[in-house]
Image (cartoon, rainbow, N blue to C red; front, side, top):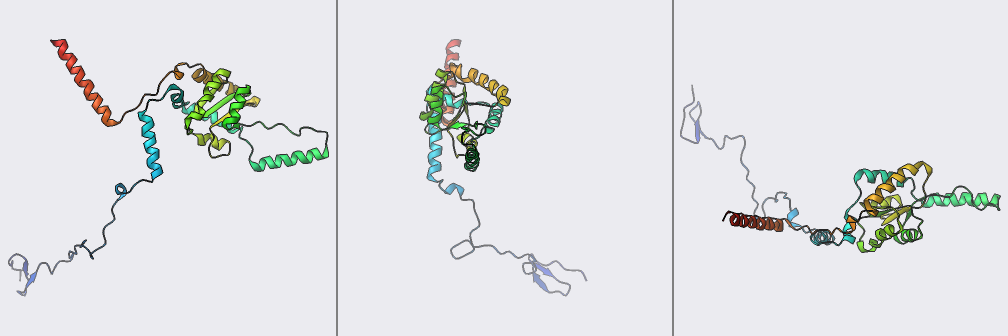
Amino acid sequence: MPKKVAKKGKVVSATGGAKSSSSNSLFKKSPRNFRIGGDIQPKRNLTRFVKWPKYIRIQRQKKILLMRLKQPPALNQFAHTIDKNQAQTLLKILAKYSPETTKEKRDRLKAEAEAKKKNPKAEHVGPKPVHLKYGLNHVTTLVEEGKAKLVVIANDVDPLEIMVHLPALCIKKEIPFCIVKGKTRLGKLCHTKNATCVALTEFKNEDMKDITTLQNNFKAEYNDNTKLRKDWGEGVMGIKNQHMMAKRAKIAEMELAKKANM
């Protein structure tokens, strides 16, 4: 016997009994209650409600401030770093001249002492180690004495004013120098956390060709480039200020066009 259609919300069975459609549902609703004492609140991304640590806020504010200010040529020259290919070639060569580690130095001195014990008349045992010189005071002295053959300066030293004299000194003494990104990269070469600058006083014959090429390139790019020492670092304003200045320029152009048509 077929089912009879009953009123809305009820189903009449073959036997004639009426059932509620809500009680017959397989998937019953269980709405959550997020009021006090109810269900646990869902997980939300609260990043925008959390303050950044103070040292990060200071770093960001400092970076923005430096962008806004106009920098004199003496400081602005540190923004002109060598390109990626030059940096890779340079760092690859400098890695060969990394200073000895503490263990290597101890082993070398021990071997020299043993050799000298056998032959007391010998002054020097083995070849003299050729490695990078680092540290601002040490490199400055080497440049003043004319012993440095190539000087590499980091661009992110803080405060930058302590490095200002070094490029001018290199130019005066006609020693090729360059500016690279990252004091940590130079520090890695010297087995330290950071290094403000490094210098080469000697190099092996096998690297003579590559180092001479780099010296010539850096001399043309930094030592002989007078424009680099005259360019001011123009302050980069915020996006709101840029839009405002663009609107003003547009209005000024429209007024000039009106005057020209009159």
